[in-house]
Length: 137
Image 1 (cartoon, rainbow, N blue to C red):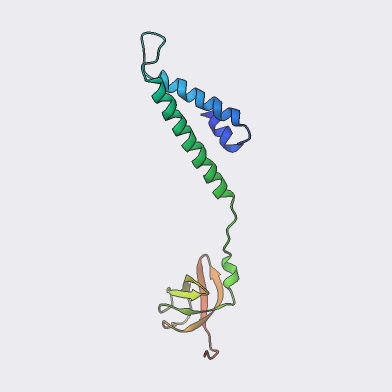
Image 2: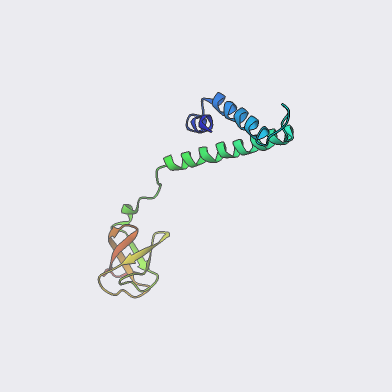
């Protein structure tokens, strides 16, 4: 398992992946006790199953590591100062549409659904809004 973990972290060390595969094949072949030197498990089955398991673990782990390194595309601070409109009544909680996205929102005063608002700030993923007093056409 140790060579597999290292080969996942450093994919240029492909020989470690091969070493882990060989170790898992031999470990799986001799998992059950035998009387002689021959394994009690079908060797072709062991090789196929080990290659599939190692391949899946290596591929899935690489994708998890890649996903963890990706920076988020969305910056919630960019919506501060933008206009939107309420989809539900907003006071302690509610929903507001800003651009093409729907956000959770909160306001100090009750704002009914369908009103234009301006985003004044945010707390976590919840937007702080106020009713927009500018007339809309």
